[in-house]
Length: 377
Ligand SMILES: Cc1cc2nc3c(=O)[nH]c(=O)nc-3n(C[C@H](O)[C@H](O)[C@H](O)COP(=O)(O)OP(=O)(O)OC[C@H]3O[C@@H](n4cnc5c(N)ncnc54)[C@H](O)[C@@H]3O)c2cc1C
Image 1 (cartoon, rainbow, N blue to C red):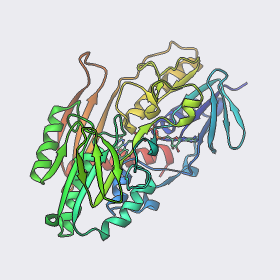
Image 2 (image 1 turned 90 degrees about the vertical axis):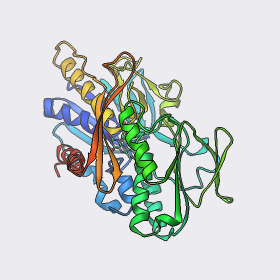
Image 3 (image 1 turned 135 degrees about the horizontal axis):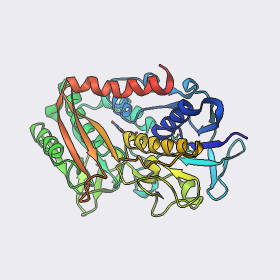
């Protein structure tokens, strides 16, 4: 009987894992990939949609284009997981596996912050699209970008939103009629790289963007239009760009897989405490920040280990916890930070690459190479 690998979630982690298994085994094993959506979207596309640089249709990549020998994609919603028996229930039935990989990403807890459910946010595709419609009607006032708690996906994204907002308002000739404030629950914009943080702080200062460090938004009053942060201060706004509290999907909690909100794993191997069950990416506590590039790196490590196990080879440990994040600095320039989470025992380190127009091509390649590898387009 063919070995069965069940992969939950077709994001960065799930797509890369299935691609590697298909490259190694083709039809010799049975890989099932389940996702509730019909299309994949890169996280950063939300910024493009919000600022009117791209339409939603242009940035969505339909899963029907994910065609890999030996891999079956099912559009189903997972309702429960039994990690002991590796049995998964969806709205269409049940699935069983020899190996289970959970790659369900991080969800948003809109009820954790009073007022969040009714306000505007840019961390979901729908939220970014909604803000994309509101922005052209905004002509003056206070723009407030606020994060409701850490950890959150792609720590540089709110800083990018602030810099892109500056450009957007400047291009419309209304920047002098507007204020931009960024509230972040981090001491610096990119903690593993002091150099990147310094560059971002300088960019904020040059553009008259107010940065409130190490604070989180605790409530939003959408009638009177102000937020309250965790030290009791209030910040008024005319336009709010929120980032909700992130958490692992609820079903992982009800399935008994989480501790303190996320799935604990051994960072180097991504093994959970359940035999033959792995977890990768934003839903796991995998020792890195929450970003696609780190979900993909973890998936590559699990795929390498599964390939070895299925071939009865020695199992290598390959999760390096490294990855590059591109950062929009505005004015068409992109910076890059190469982060290494595991090599230095004193904590993560980052190498900063100054923003340039040339790095924009690098970022475009990041997206286009994955579109080509996963979807053949
Ligand atoms: C504004 C913004 C900008 C970003 N920019 C970058 C960037 O420049 N670079 C970068 O590396 N990362 C970036 N990210 C972060 C990146 O998008 C995520 O970290 C990454 O997608 C995580 O990958 P993952 O595989 O863990 O989960 P995801 O990609 O989130 O995939 C999880 C999948 O699980 C599915 N799922 C969840 N629950 C269920 C269920 N019950 N049943 C079925 N399917 C389910 C979801 O539909 C989803 O497709 C950004 C994020 C945001 C919000």
